[in-house]
Length: 260
Image (cartoon, rainbow, N blue to C red; front, side, top):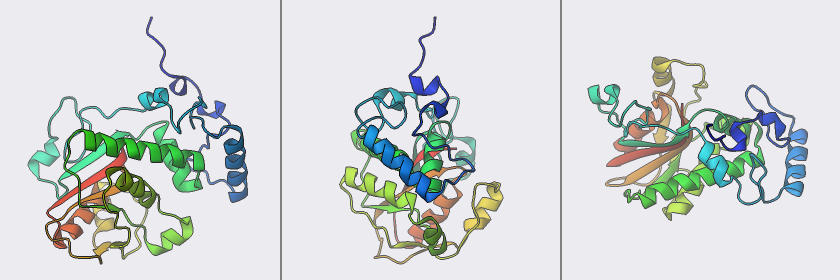
């Protein structure tokens, strides 16, 4: 008989009263605050998914996150076997490498949405732990450390609406773990764009074309790492990479928690 997986993959997430379903749902701020306060009081140092005592996400829940099998080294597209995907073979991407931790699937997709749409504190702690895990993985693999870590920026209008930039928060965890400087203001989104979620590949590229600008110090000869929560087609990271290369960067890599 096949051994059952860890509990988070074997039950409905609604069985955890402190897990916020987020897809298509924005909870009232007062309800979010009350739920999170109660969760912190009752389970201050427990896994945010299965409530086991210990870290923000326990070892069992980490192991059950949907793995990214044989990702293409330049775009992180999952492949049947290790290698470079056909698209990257035909046309060399502007981005030198994309490091993705897991597949954008349950429960990671719901955690990202719960944080992005509802500022869920429990999801925030879990995502911070996963960002640190990815940073540690790159360091342990002997991957060359970047000179700067940059978050994917939000337009000022979107930032006012949401109140925070989730990519900025994740980038801070990565930079601290790698002991690399964070530059949170040099990269700017100068044009408001539509949400990428409902757009096709070509529309995504057009949507972010000319949307970013570099207003920081000279990047000549610098190696930079751009951090975001999710990558789908890579259009946003590719657009940012072009801007950073024109500013002088010699190597631009991306790091995301999930690859859709």
